[in-house]
Length: 174
Ligand code: HEC
Image 1 (spheres, helix red, strand yellow):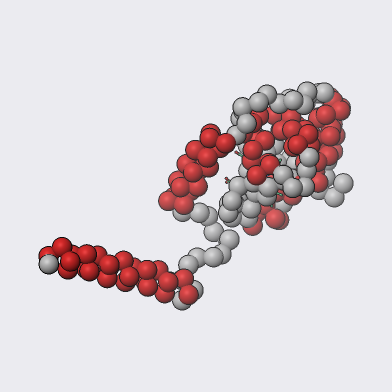
Image 2 (cartoon, protein in one colour; image 1 turned 60 degrees about the horizontal axis):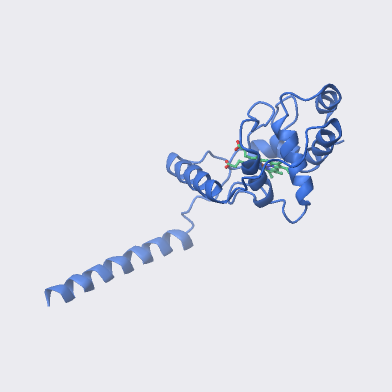
């Protein structure tokens, strides 16, 4: 008997909790705005979940695209087309879009990913990062193009002369 009422009490509590959560959602009390910074709990969960998932899923293969001038320029062209609006150019200034995103995209000229394993960067570009604004490019780019981007990002802070001057001259509209 005691066990039964204990279970009934538990079920009632779960029901009240679920109804409460439903009320919060349909009542419009869930924060949905992007013009704020994520709180510490959200940041902690997002960072740890991302890190653990990528550790499990990222390819361990070496980058098959050599850092030749030609490959770096190919990576730069793709970067200007698909990434610079959020991740910025050589001057490190955040665009209008980048300033308003939730999460804020790192400006890669100043907070780059040169030290990350290539497979990790490959995975992020191919699959994107859910609920951050970072798109997945697996459907729009070929594998080879994603590796060209990885190569460009890996060498962004020590590009050979011609690629470096193209990087310095790059603008969002060209
Ligand atoms: C619409 C905005 C947007 C575009 C376009 C975009 N990204 Fe991102 N990207 C983000 C955001 C936001 C994050 C941060 C995600 C987070 O906080 O976990 C991110 C994260 C990343 C990271 C991880 C950075 C780190 O410090 O670990 C890499 C690498 C990256 N993006 C590469 C790219 C590349 C390459 C492209 C273009 C092919 C691109 N992104 C296009 C928004 C964007």
